[in-house]
Image 1 (cartoon, rainbow, N blue to C red):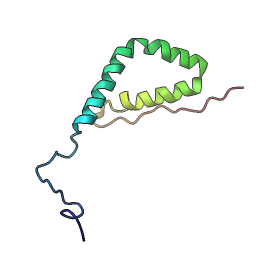
Image 2 (image 1 turned 180 degrees about the horizontal axis):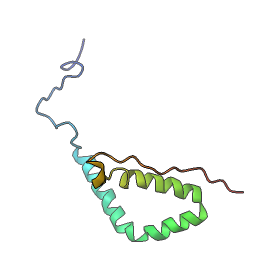
Image 3 (image 1 turned 135 degrees about the vertical axis):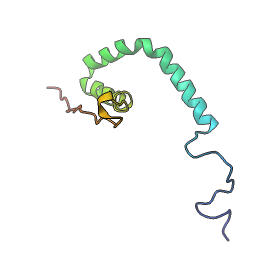
Length: 95
């Protein structure tokens, strides 16, 4: 015997709108962003140390940061279109 209103049908049509995060997710993000904000002053030192000690891992970190910071920006010359990242990362090997 099937339970509920059926596949793809909400039992609460006036429920949370699509794309809205639940309260727990919002709270966790807020805490995380607060921690990042307070730690921001240490980032240059940490990144420089990582660059010197482990260039490969540094490039991975910078790639991940750039995907969030650079790749989501729009240029005024792009007519509002998203700009494709033009960074190519090659693996660095130790000799």
